[in-house]
Length: 401
Image 1: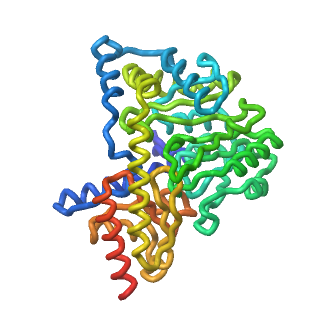
Image 2 (image 1 turned 90 degrees about the vertical axis):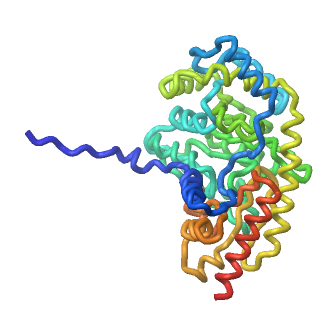
Image 3 (image 1 turned 120 degrees about the horizontal axis):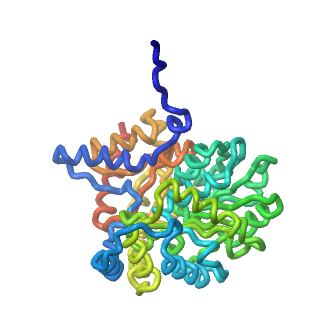
């Protein structure tokens, strides 16, 4: 009997994992050889989770909260999230039929795409951008249509740009502000214009707002929820990782319409059954506890952002814009790459090996990221200075060869 060889399905083969972790692994391997490596590649706050949040988890463990919960989260957390949404966005949401708690915001993105999309639907998404958007949409069988962000337009997207991409097959527009990896922040006019477009064409907006509080220079955050006449067509994706330094806790949430809610909950049930029980108690403490730790983190990020700009300004041959939010700077190094005839990924690996500094190559965030590197300033000012000066040394050496 002949048994056919097993082959991995194309939907899995073509699934793109997050490359930041690959770069981190490479940097860690170099460190094991005794090399001092400055880590500016990973998008993770270097702050500790605030103590009152950790205490809430510990207390929940002591009380025996180590069992299954409802798939969309415990009622107390969903109630707290509905209060938070009311305070931030000014809209009323029902904790029973509009809120679903997820195992991180990435799962929220995935669940939203799997619920919304059919084979052949089109999704308009930012590129460079968080890779989960296109990966999840492609996995769901949709065609991904990137809108290109470039340094020449300050990494912004305009309603007229989106309008040209809409077809009869368009189903979803993805927005992310503050933006990873570009650090850009959408204006009220642009958000409003895209919301109006979506409503005119009966489209959904998936709005990833996980960096929402991390804004600089007195800027305000604008959400599609602020402008939608039909909020049922907006899906809010958010989480606790960035603002509360809770990356390892894996806790996020979705705000969805009551019509979509049971289907998204069904997808979440199949994926993970439920969020972690005691982590949900920690999330309640994060939402209802003191917010001063968040404000202090944002102040420190702004100081670090200013140091990034100061140090980058000393390097010839690169281009950048001042990040307005999140904790990333996206640097145009295309002149250098042309001179040395290397890709951004090859250059990043060289920097780790030869100069002891790790950045993220632009193509980790999509094909339009070629020619760029992402700098995460979720690290100490000393390390930021040291890392960017090592970049400057590398640039000087390759440009004078």
